[in-house]
Image (tube, rainbow, N blue to C red; front, side, top):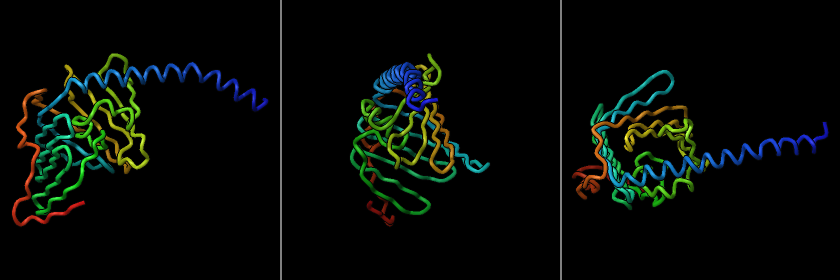
Length: 207
């Protein structure tokens, strides 16, 4: 078969599929944006399971996020770790290691699940491609556009307008599932929840 004819036929076949896909993705982005825009702030308990190589590890704790890149991710079990961001800087404090690391927070939606919930929903399309695998289901899959992202895809599920579960597949084959419970949406969160001062004697690292 003539190569040019074959390519033309393929192009004509794919054109309507491309149009449908673009429309579907636009709808998915709109639906997800609407859900995230309605979440100005959120507090919840979380249970997190990471699986890799046939082994799994579980964590649990509490979290709080607020629009404007403010979040608090407080892991209590099996070991204590605290991640706090105030909109411009982020602290990661490991109690066992007696170490606190400070770094800047990207103003756009970042790679972390907490940043997805606390960032600007309108920036999603700049950083991710979005799909909604099941029509009518509030379940979305986001794939980062950046080749330097540390995960392959992220899915987020909603129930009653609330984010209830996130699943992250990273670049080294690990799958992390996060389930939220005792969810409170759009309640006032004290500013102190998003501030952190390293305890005395802790090793501080600035990145």
